[in-house]
Length: 306
Image 1 (cartoon, rainbow, N blue to C red):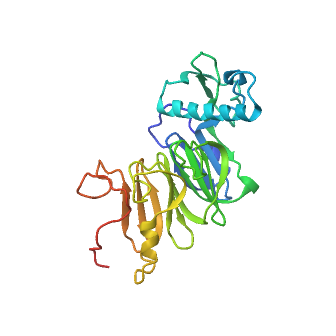
Image 2: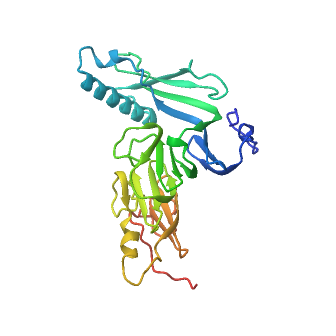
Image 3: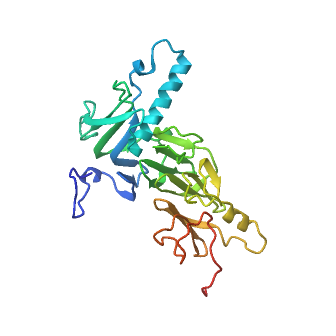
């Protein structure tokens, strides 16, 4: 919300003074705020598809369905080229002023121009720098209770435990069953949830009633806690906690109350106050003496006295 390359002293976001913020979340290059009224405001980098990409890029005479498929495949490839700094096939050439970015609600804008190998501009991926907070519209204007921000994607929980996600989705981190990015909040099919966190390219939630975690997205470092170094396009149950909950004698001791995500690791807090970590641990972020990454959310035996 502050128009400057860097700010060394905390500054008041005056554009939000008309509402009382009750929660905030910081992503890689954007910020989310939820207000007392349940509205969500966002500011910073806003990445979206450009549906007006030149059809000439795909060739003349293609069938309608085939053309649409080619269009979205190119758009998804342009996402990967943009975020991975790839120059194969589709090239990131330049930032140019965005003529559509005008007015206080948008702020200063830029559009990332993407070109095919033949040099033709497609403008398939658009990045806007929105330095003024804008209201994120949710279906039916639902009231938001929790927010989380990752690397160019966001998640919110509304009353009733319904989960909505939007943004970049190259690894299925949005939990929607595909790799297509979403510009607007989209409902995620699954159980009601009470907590959500976003990492670099993964998301984790806690189921509302039993406190069992579910995760989705990039999992090459084991950050999903699924017992293997793999990813998933939909929310999958972290069975370490689920199986323990169903074991006679353990009761609710492994039900989770909080979850937090780093770039490539995830931290779970149980209702009994125990901490479990999975994922990358090259820098000791798992609290273990070894430097070998863990892909399960399991931990050692309980040693402290209560």
